[in-house]
Image (cartoon, rainbow, N blue to C red; front, side, top):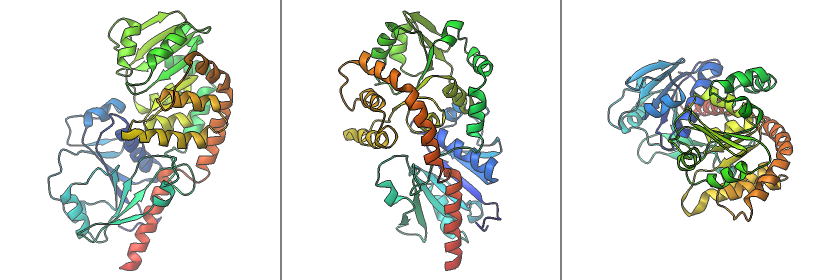
Length: 392
C-alpha cells in the first residue's frame, strides 16, 4: 500500500513490557492517536496483556487477538512463528529496540514494497539525540533499513505525544471545581482532603518518600497525598500502619495519605489535572505531567553508572533553568545531589510553584510549535515511503 498522504496506511507496533506500565502506556497512547486522529489501521503486539489491562480495563488477558477501541491487539507470545509478506504492515515500529520476531523480519524483506521500519527510542533532552534522530541502520543480511525515531523537545527531534483536543479538555476540567470534586470523590476523599494541597505520588521504590511524609505531617498546611496502589509501598505501609491496598488511608498531623486503585489512562490525566503538584516517574507519566498545567517533579528511571542523572540535568537545563528550587529539589529527589535540609527544599519549592505553572504554559507552546509526535512520525514514514518508491 502506498504511503502517500491520500492513502490509509497499516501500522504495527511491537511492544515488550519492561518497566511495568511506561512501555505499554506510550505504545497504547500512540496506537490510539494514530487510529482515531489519523485513521491508521493499527495492530499493537504486546507480550504482557496483564500490565496492559491495568491501564486499559477493556483488555482481555486471555485473548490472542482482540479489538480494543478500534485498535487490533495481538498477544506477542513468543519470537517463534512464520509470517507471509501480506501480513506485514506498511509501517513497522519496534519500540525501544525490542527485537522483532525473526519470521516477521524475513516476511518484511519479501514484501513489495518493503515496509517503513522505525525503531522508536526513549525520550531524553540530551543534545546527541538531534544527530541520531532519523538515522538509518542497514540490516546485516537482508535488504532492509531501519530508521531511528527519537521523541524530543525541538524541531530536530520527533516531538512528544499530545492529542489534538488534550489542552481544551484540560482547561475545561480545571475550570470546573464541581467536576474535580466529583472525580476525586470517586476515591473517597473527604472535605478536608479536597480542601488540602493535593499531591499525586508516582515514583520508584528508592525515592525518599518517608522524608517528605515527615515534613508534610509536621507542616503548616493540610496536605493530601494520593498514591496509586503498589507505589512507595514500604513508606505508605509504615505511615498508614496497614497494607497499602486501594482505599487505605491515614492522617497524621497535617498529612493525609490515601491509596488509590490503579486507574485507566484517561483517569490518570484527570488525576494530574486535579492535583496541585504531581510526582511522576519514567517517561509516560512524565510527558503527561508536562501537559497538565501543574508543577511536577520527575523521578527518572535509574540506569547503571548514574547515566540517568545526566539525562535529568539535561531536561532541567531546558525546562527549569529559571526555576532553581525545582531544579535543586528534583536533583535531590533523584539522588543526584545531597539535600542539606528537606524542609527548606520543600519550602522553596512551594514558594516557586506559581512560576512553575507559568513555565508549563510557555513550555507547551515551545514544544508543540514544531508538531506532535504522531503527526511527525507519519510524515517521516511517508517521506521514507516516497524515497523507496523512487528507487524502485
